[in-house]
Image (cartoon, rainbow, N blue to C red; front, top):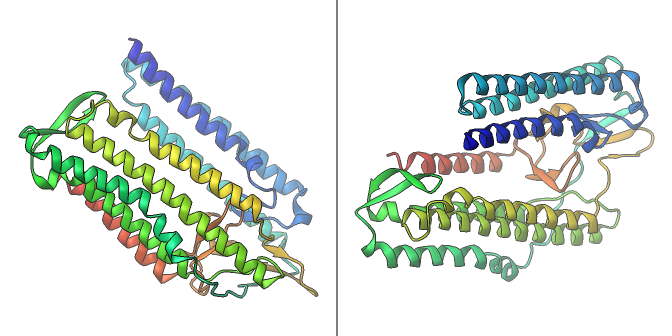
Length: 365
């Protein structure tokens, strides 16, 4: 009964937090970019725009409330919290649909009322900055490589003493699935670590070769800021990768029965810590090296750099085949995003999807 109440409370809190985050989302994003739509400064106080924000929040409260009450009713009737994951997924889907509906309405108002009249759209000039120091970048590989080497040593040292049947899946501290011991099975965590290291290497290669947009009138200042920023991003990703490698090592040690199976439940803690550190590092860099706004004055008309709503799918994904840049400044928030219309990014996504498929289907095969 206690475990049942804990599970119900957990799902209720998650559904409530999802609804709350979506409710305050318009306040978390700049008023110049709402629901992924650029709003000119002179239109921020428009009644039509404010009514769409109010409608969005009303829909969030209504749909979140319905999902929350439905989840509680089903849990009481069935006496189980087994459907909680389904209701959480329903909550995420409904919140996404509410967001898309608000975005659609705002774009319709923007077009009908000609909010972009007087603006011109262009892609800013890009340039190739000096590549960051190779030695410094190679040092960023030391942390994840150390974890991989440590995992490999443990696996090879323990292999002769492992049982013929090994646990491969846990529910809490209890194993629920087993497999015969093989070299491939024991080294699976190391293979997974190497795949993530390969993905990190691709990202580092892209960041070192990417063309950038000058963010300051002083060209040398722009190049210096971009160099420091890219080095900081590479370091932040190295920290995150190291934490992910530690996660995989802990899961592997649980499968090798070196640590209790309960460690698989907490193996995500290092990754969460890594994400927090990444946000802190990138936020500090963005505070030290603030960029310019995307919309800038240019007589006789104003210019929007990469800011046409049609380039931003769902308001968040930048897709522009005519833009040669791989990485571009975000419309809002911290740092940069990638241009999914660039062939290099498409290839990287295919490699990532193939790697994830291998990780998921490899043990089954």
